[in-house]
Length: 186
Image (cartoon, helix red, strand yellow):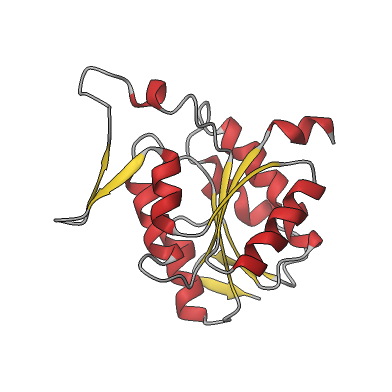
């Protein structure tokens, strides 16, 4: 358990009840948790702010002469778990903004939703989500996060390890939806 305490998870959900549930599940598993209620607050916490006039994301206080990694050392997020259905910015939109960011793209992202809509699930997985959990999230789901957290740490030395190994490492996908070579497994 002590080794897991080093992992910091950013939980994003507009529902107070769901946010408290995921926060409690993660803390019970010894993860450090920061919980926010919107995609824009998540991006702000990560150091990315949206330019409201032209709706483009930009990293504030980073000049071309600074390394992005230096800017994000104080916010060491190991994994982001986000609800899909949120007002203003969906979990899918948040996922895309994270994967478009040079400094954040290697952070594993997990999407969760009450709705089992195959086209939505596949779109999230194709865009780079590690997993898609159906709500309510349970302890068995949280237990599956550890492999993604460890892969996220190893990603710096082995790029694309998540995509190569995800199909081999998944077990008991009864509540988790993962994309296997274009085929959906529920």
